[in-house]
Image: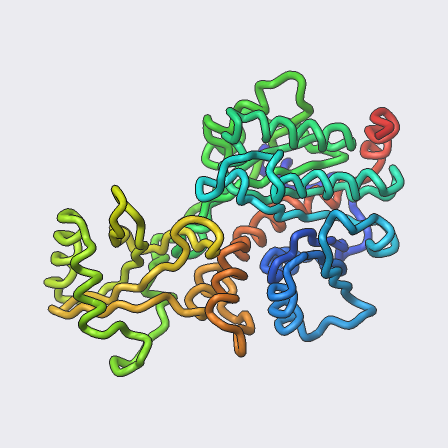
Length: 397
């Protein structure tokens, strides 16, 4: 049997067949969508933002009080006794990332928002030893790996170690699944970890992520996962909403001219080549400030830039439709935001663009979660709890 087969096939079964997960910092529920595709049942969610909760409830119309509980509250006020009865298989936390992102102030885990991570671990600590979920997952920006020269990631791993979890760290980019550049860090904790496989999946664990595995003071493991083969057919044109030329969302000629005037010489040359092409193509553009002046930058590739919220850096992206001698520009639509997150069927009716940008820009790519859930988190939950109980007894956390 190959190493890959050994890594992908749990040695012992785990009941029930549909593991139950809790979703911390749930946002609009995109992590839930991915986890459900992987076979999990999300029965509990928490977030502090009413606007996100409203989007969440509108989409998951099948929820009842018996099947799902949404706790709209600051996580500092949430306690373990509000979690579902019985042992969770997975606790997922897409904790706030503004304090460790490039768009934030880089305050690290000491920042107000990112410190919410410690509220998450407090809740885990409140659970009886035999009721802690065998698997936990923290999703964050890749900036967590370098924040304070790696000290913040080390602190997060140590905190999970104290709770009995061995930790793996890997990165996934949404562009492997959808036409959006969105690298994210995933910290996976396991009470019953798989065998460590050094040098496993260098694409997912590049050199800049090797520090924690070399640190002998940390309890870590590396799980051998299937290779990811990004589809060569992924392109922005596949998700762009087709609007009629008379649609009022297209910018008027004066605004388009202003857009062109705010391009650098290199950007202008790039745009002109696309305009002269015999086919129509689509690009995204950001407006940034360079040397105190606003400037538009058009991506050179056929994918969108990372969707962001209005709270961090250059948030809104414009869609550029160009070719055959013509140029049209407009803001990205809510449907496009959803499609770029792998959630094209998400219910967005009745929500203002600002809410959609806030909701989707602060979320996680659905197919990335589904891939991680299918190939990693589900096999971990299917391992027996015997070793986990032994680890917890030793830790006594």
